[in-house]
Length: 281
Length: 289
Image (cartoon, rainbow over all chains, first blue to last red):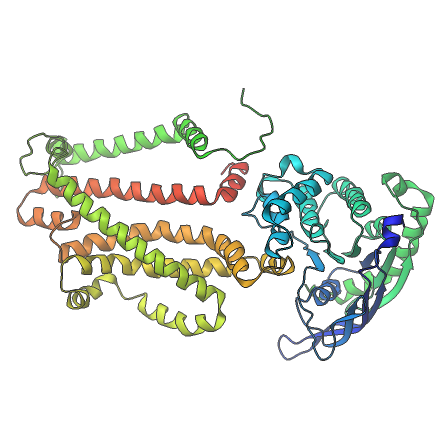
């Protein structure tokens, strides 16, 4: 961790014994079963599990999109949700970047990014624009800041969406498989860019993925989830120094870490595949 | 060689207009379309005047119609030189304009509310669905009964059909919005009025304009029917009047005028829609659509 991250006091996320039961047609489906995670302030925490195991369910509970069935979630010691108030308040201290992207298509990148601070009345429209421009420049997006999301590549759109989240100075950034469906080359570029953005704007990152190389490359820690009902199988600290760049990918330590994670996640993936269950959102 | 330097600002209205005009002129679609119209005109001439077919022989042919239409001294009083012609057009255009304004002004807010509030939709949707299938012409007697002048019932009837379409499309527009946009807006700290103004309204806009396109057509349709029943001016009135006074050329002139005015009003709605939804127009342009 660099100096900026060590100074980071905010953004410790504590998920304690969280379960979630869906009851769509009278037959209860358990999506999450007694999940517990301790995420330190400023950590990049990768949540890795087979497709459809219920990772997004966990993210949605943290974001406040739906209630939990039991357990509690704390942010910096303050209760977000527990048995009494099962659904967390949606708030700009936890910013979500969605799986398929949710930039407003009718706003230019600049207007998308400056939207948050303006509606929260944290900045004047002029200040918000200036700050948005500065952040877009940092992310290498300033030349296309007047374009609409429909006019740019999905990689650029995802970067802009992360900038739109970061401008609000959230305590936690919640990323839901943001680089899904991207080719390996683009993904590698996106990963380095994310780490760069993180260096400049350190924040706790809760990152959901089913790509294990992605998990090892980016994360301080990787939590392996079991197949449905999802629970935490194992948390593996990734012992690779930052800053990491693409050269890490071909190094021996990286390969060993990947192997270790793969061994743990493979049996879960096999179980999930054998069960043939429909993926939960 | 087109200018490919990265432009930092969006193109102005005027430059967009020029671009589209230039592109349309250099596009074969335009000429094929004109050729199609010419073919249709030729067949019309052939069957009515050149080599009249049974059933068609009573119809006024294009030569007779155009002679009358462009005559400074028309036999039956209606041509591009007569003031009366424009009075009738204006009467109808004005009514359609008012009808569309009312239908949009009432229909869009109602549709937004129905898409927004599940409870309100539960109350109102069955009513809408029961009223909607009633043909506009079935309302004629009640419309005349309710409004005892000649102008209001016509506008009422032209409003009615457009209103249903506008409500329905606006509601579907709200329901079509990706729920992640609403979640994202909430994350970003939107108050309900922000959500409405920045997400619901622009998100529903493409559907609203699709609805408007349809409702312009429907509005003309019901207007002409209403003008035939009640009214002392307007293109519909003039058609029926020409029929009773046996001036068939005038009927065809008015029909062609309706075609032109209807086309122009649809084009106007499309143009306004494109201006309001540049984000969509540009994304579609990239896909060559």
